[in-house]
Amino acid sequence: AQSVSQHNHHVILSEAASLELGCNYSYGGTVNLFWYVQYPGQHLQLLLKYFSGDPLVKGIKGFEAEFIKSKFSFNLRKPSVQWSDTAEYFCAVIPMDSSYKLIFGSGTRLLVRP
Amino acid sequence: SAVISQKPSRDICQRGTSLTIQCQVDSQVTMMFWYRQQPGQSLTLIATANQGSEATYESGFVIDKFPISRPNLTFSTLTVSNMSPEDSSIYLCSVRTDYNYGYTFGSGTRLTVV
Image 1 (cartoon, rainbow over the protein chains, first blue to last red):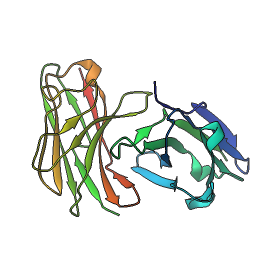
Image 2: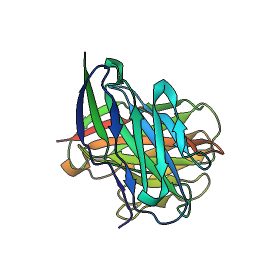
Image 3: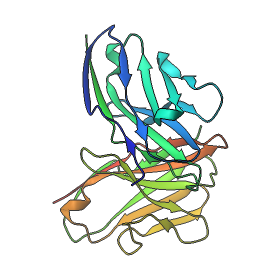
């Protein structure tokens, strides 16, 4: 079945550590890709998005993601995390044949220890 | 981007009753969506709320269980009918806010059915 997979359900890091969260999707056609973040008690917020062009996308708060088409992946990275990055991170995909429906991965809970 | 007010923020309901969740947007939007996030799981699209016509439901969701209204371009309601404990979830309203597939989310309604 078509899906979005996030392999890490829980990640614990110390401040200043590097972060990489995996995201793979199984849609074969053209896709738009997103990473959302949900800080404790807050709304879902858009971190970054990829539609076309440079596969390395930079978002807010120092996050970036790389689209690797051959691997159907869109991994999220940050060189040095902060305690304030503690949140849940969701990868999401719009398959371009889906009438604008945003399909989410299962999410990754990140805890950054001071 | 649009600002979404979602009410109630949380509720505890008896099984067999119904709850209506409201989603108010501060600007006119064409596309509104309702999502469900069950405990420990991903966000699942319930339906697309269409202004002036019936909502479009995803596989596994039916109008009798989740009736949706969309009387205008700034407001929608989702009703969870004849509730059971399995309906305990967070329900989120989302709107598409710009051509580049920007989606904004409400803060969610945390529903517990006892």
